[in-house]
Length: 315
Ligand SMILES: NC(=O)c1ccc[n+]([C@@H]2O[C@H](COP(=O)([O-])OP(=O)(O)OC[C@H]3O[C@@H](n4cnc5c(N)ncnc54)[C@H](OP(=O)(O)O)[C@@H]3O)[C@@H](O)[C@H]2O)c1
Image (cartoon, rainbow, N blue to C red; front, side, top):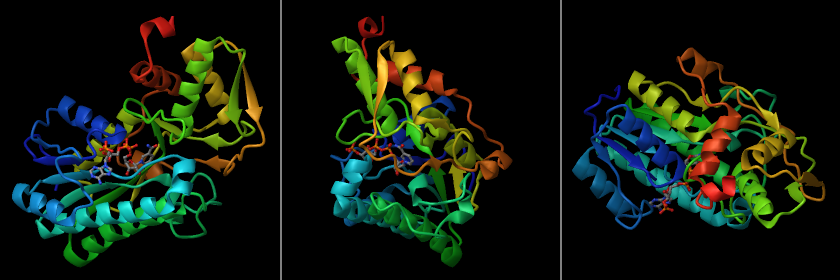
C-alpha cells in the first residue's frame, strides 16, 4: 500500500543515524502522523511488548531502521550479540507486524549481506551465491534472515514487506566512537583531532587502495520514502550512489573538509578488506531515484553535524 500524508508511520530506531534521517525526510514531505518510541519506552528485543504495541497502534507502514550496528571490530568481537539481537529484533517486528495486520514495511538490510568475492558492481541477484566476509558474518546472516522473513511473509500471506540494501552511509547522528565506528566517521574524527593537536601526520589503516561507495544518509532516507510513496512491494533493492572512491581519495577529501593540512600516512600492517565494494543501482534508477549529494558536500554537512564540531575548530 502506498504511503499517504495521513498514514500512521512507525519509524523504529528513530534516534539512530538512519531512523533520524527518515524522520527528517518524512516530516519535510508533510508526514506528521509518526509513531516514535525510544528504547527506554520499550525494548524491541521484548517480543510481548513489541506485539502489544503493534496490535494497539496498527501502523500503516513500518520502517525497520533499528538494529545492533557497528564497525568491523565490534562485529568481530561481539559476534553472538550481533547475531542474536538482530535476529530477535527483526523477528519480533516482522512477525508482530503480520499479526497486527500491517500490510507494508521496509526492512533496512546492508550491503555486507553479499558474498565477499562478488563480481562488481554488485547486483541484487548475487545474494547467497558465495561465502560471506567472516568478520561480520553473524550480522550478515541476521540481515539475510530478515530479508528471507520478509520474502516469506509476502509469499505465504501476500504482505508487501520490502528489503533495501544501503551501501556505506554517513551523516548526522553517525557513530564517532573510534572503537566501534565505520571508516568514514573514523577518518573525520581522526583528521579533526590531528588538526586540533597540530599534528603533521594522520594515520589511515591499510594501503589506501581499496574502493568503497558512500551515501549521505539523507539521500538514503529520500530513496526509502520515495519507494514507500510509490507503494513499491517488489524484490530487494540496492541503494547507493553508483560511484565509488579509493580510501586514499576519501582520506584526502576528509582532510580538505576538516582543514587538516598535514600528510596522510598509510599503516599497511592493518588489513585492507575486500578490494572493491560497489553496488549496482540500476534497479533503483528504474524506480525513478538517484542520489544527489556529492561526496565532498556530504562530508562537509556530516562534519558540521558531528558532536565534536565547533565553528572555531573549522576556522
Ligand atoms: N550505518 C551504515 O553505514 C549502514 C549501512 C547499511 C545499512 N545500515 C542499516 O541501517 C539500519 C540503521 O543503522 P544506523 O546506522 O542508523 O544505526 P544506529 O545509528 O546505531 O541506530 C540504530 C538504532 O536502533 C536502536 N535500537 C537498537 N537495538 C534496539 C532495541 N533492542 N530496542 C530499541 N531500539 C533499538 C538504537 O537505539 P539506541 O539509540 O537506544 O541504541 C538506535 O536508535 C540498520 O539496520 C543497519 O543495518 C546502516
